Amino acid sequence: MQQAIAHIALLVRDYDEALAFYVGILGFRLVEDSPRPQPGKRWLVVAPPGSSGASLLLARATSPDQLAAVGSQTGGRVFLFLQTDDFWRDYQRYRSAGVNFVRPPSDEPYGTVAVFEDLYGNLWDLLQYNGSGPPGHTAE
Image 1: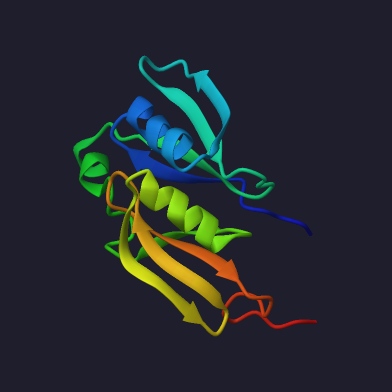
Image 2: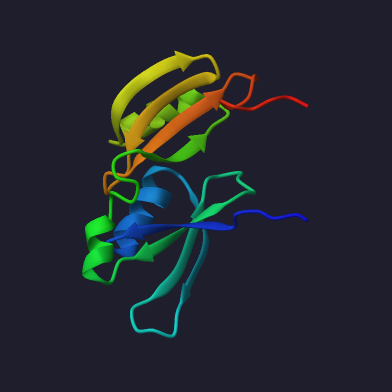
């Protein structure tokens, strides 16, 4: 059996402001932007440059419960992990673009990591593994 996570739904307040952040500031690529049959709905998918794995489905919150969860889908824990091949390049680029880092860079046994927040307050790890693999990874 072979399975993979295709998309991760991320609740957003507004499609266009989310696109401006993820594509305009973080440099993600727009994978798909298609209207849905429901008025005002779009299938909006973005992914980091060079990624062939899971992508983000930017899902506009429409109910009071969904709106309350925007920016806090994991109750304040780091939600998403953005792996890079050059930590310092991306860290400097994001800082220059105004991305707020809530935890400074640190060297960990598995690599270099810093925590930033997206435009809604969701926490992300920006990380570059040092070759030993992610925490909990065992080489076979």
